[in-house]
Image (cartoon, rainbow, N blue to C red):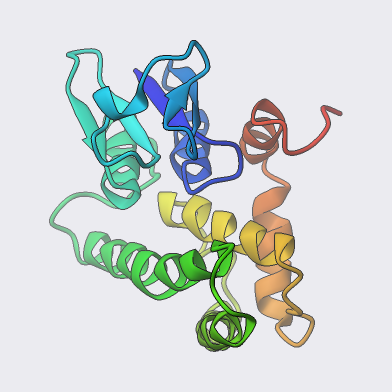
Length: 203
């Protein structure tokens, strides 16, 4: 499998999932602005959406959209990274993945824009902070989003929290969320993903 990624982008989520799953894969770095691969090839010929992540399977099929990719990885791995299909817990995982993608990820997007006015960015930041407050309340007494078990939803939320850190969000009033972020960050495979993407120094 090949994971098309950009360092620190939302592709960090499936990168973490692949490492946690122990699935062999190749990383292919994408310049999202130029839509080019490191070898100069046109990324749009690989993925016409021009976005990451994209996962190319050994069959040659390309799968896009992070929440779908991480579930596919979990199902291939069979390592408790997602509850069993058709179970009540699996639908709860779907609920979390949809919440993260719709309420966090999509509200973060405008804040990365170099042309959006500061007051507009402040609007989106307030929206994201409100979602983080909800998450803080939900994580009280839980190790991870689904309880005691780390799942692919946690890699996705960790990616969003890393964006919040990059943008200097003040989450000091959300102790459960901060403790959760530290718990996920301490996982060896999460550290490996950060190191491989050049986001942290190797120990």
